[in-house]
Image 1 (cartoon, rainbow over the protein chains, first blue to last red):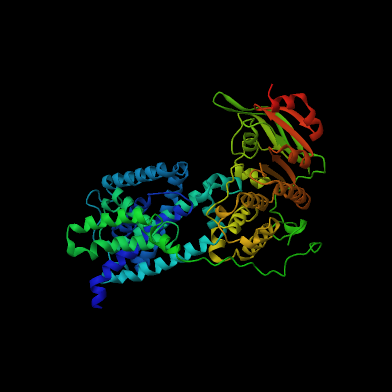
Image 2: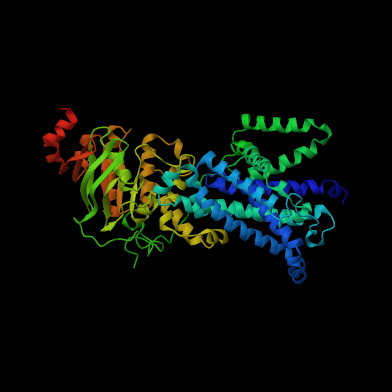
Amino acid sequence: MDFLQTYGFLIVTMLQQGLLGLSLYFPLMAGQLSLASPGFYALGGYIAAIMLTAPQFAGWRDALGSWIFPVTWLFSALASAVLGVIVGVPALRLRGIYLALATIAFVQILQVLSLNLSITGGAVGLFAIPQAFGFVDRWQYIWIFLPTVIVVLLFAHRLQGSRVGRAFRAIREDELAADAMGIPPTRYKVLAFVIGAVLAGVVGAMSAPFLNTWNARQGTFDASIAFLAYTLIGGSRSMWGPLLGGALLASLPELLRSLADWRLVINGLVLVVASLYLPQGIVGALGRLRRKAPPQRPVTPSTPALGDTP
Amino acid sequence: MTGPDLFKGHVLSKGHAAPSVPMSAGQQVLQASGLTRRFGGLIAVNNVSFEVRRGEIFGLIGPNGAGKTTLFNLMTGLTPPSSGTLTFGGQDITGFAPHRVAGLGIGRTFQNIRLFKVLSALENVKIAQHARTHAGLTQGLTGRDRAEERLVDERAWALLDLVGLAGRAGEEAGNFSYGDQRRLEIARALATQPQVLLLDEPAAGMNTSEKGELTSFIRRVRGEYDLTVMVIEHHVPLVMNLCDRVAVLNFGELIAVGDPASVQKDPKVIEAYLGG
């Protein structure tokens, strides 16, 4: 257990940041560069923190016991979905860098709100958030974050192979052509945006007990840029990219701790080198080494022959 | 699996195919009246009225910049008209979004090929079946879309067979030759199961023998899928050989409509092409 005592917090943080990288990946599947994730992450965290500390929810906590934690995830997911639709419908009329800017503004608005509302604890924030499921050590959060990573990867995998995933890809490649082929772009862009929002919100709700306190520093412009860096470095065309990018960049400051202040320089260098030499990210570069197997034609004796149909 | 049965009788096409309006041969499918589109001071399409009859191959010709592609864009919802109306099978579809127009049964190709270039040929054709299928997020995630997915796959392969690209199904569309990309775009448009197919310069970049093949291909597809075809084409012999009727645009105005032989003799058309 020494290893977990030493590195458990780091490993959980890597998984958590990987998940946040993935929250950018879903809108990117439909070609939408959204930097709204920190906003939903902060929102989810606040919802969990309030439900876990506010006296108004004492009755819930007593009644639900440990079930209160999944309930906070659920509420955060619902709130993120609703807010995602409200923000997504107008924001997704914007393209490219304009959408990115609008979503940054959204993050800023939420941050200002959380600094000024009393329910979010103002500038001090909320603290003494109880540990999830009576965990006594930080590394135990691996039992929350690792299954979540697996579920999200399975979700992304199934999504990619489905009709909805194809619609996302079509919009990413050429929105106008997708439209002309019968795909309503707005509906699918909002859907992709909301999936990312829900993921970020749930990760926020999971992170509030993990970090013990929650305040306005959780959803910032800096976080937007950090998450963007995850997808740039890891690669935005495969679900493994943002996960790897998030895990890698989250671990860098820790691994380079001995370098003291130089670690920020190294961090910056990694970003520059990666964007120069790995334009498709690490996973994109690895993917080019692998030859894809040609698609298999289905064997279909069931094909209705001429005149066979009723 | 080629032939007229490709879509008909499929489990999926029941109730999900483009709502087919009862129309007998020779009846009008599309009707444009007074279609106009201004871009600032330029009138790209000026008060154009015509009708397309069911089952015909309707050619649209005219000098460069005459407004042919703009007219296609007006008809498929990519550009909203400044004024005028468009009806399809009796329904007013003026101002409909492109995906609605496609869903109703008007498919198209693009002059400047707009395939999903980094996606495989197979995937291009699968994507275009979107409006004819309906698995949502939950069906896709829980695997309840399996039956539908199998049919999507079968149809996609059959369409690639039709255009002779099944052997290269896994290759990225962007790697195909110009002619093959045009063929793939036709397959993709057919995957939307259109009643009316709009082809924007399908022969551009093809050599003479390919053009000959294209002519018989378009005729064959029209017959097999019971289509009405509208085609923009510069190559006059191809148009004369292929089309049942031809419309001529010049500076955004429709200057002649009729059978190829009479349009060719029309003094206004001769003037437009030779300059006056």
